[in-house]
Image 1: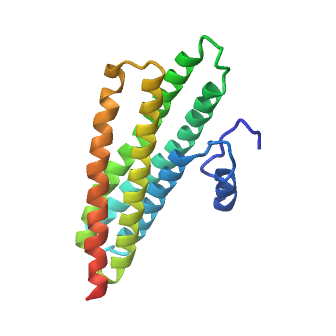
Image 2: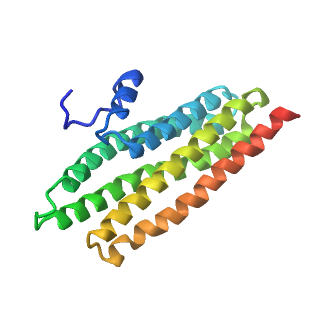
Length: 207
């Protein structure tokens, strides 16, 4: 595997984690957040598949399969953008184009984080549905999926904030980051919703 090629999300998990542990940033925290969302989507689909007598669950399972693929693609894209941002940051401080390159790369990385966040938003509604219609023995799986979802959304928001900070420090106009700032707030709401569902469902296990 070349040093400048972000590891694909189709790489075996052990190899992907080994790449994540390397000081390359591609994959980095954004891709890791996406994988958490993909894990949540996969676990939620398992729950949906265990509820075959409800048409809503069957429809949900189909959507979750698409969301899992979507967020794994987003993980790969995030790795590409992270590599580009790293290359921009590594340019010489004397390079007159450095600020522009970092600004543009940070904005592109923010868009990648935003894509990951969008999947997190969509998964919250699927989680809410399954928490209402799934069978009681699946409560632990729903709660774990909700916790993974909350963590993935939180990670996406953190990375988005970091990208925006870099963009501003290197000359991005305030109007260029307004949309992303609204997304950060929206992700905070989605994270809280997922975390609340995780706690509510987990409480069933103590009864």
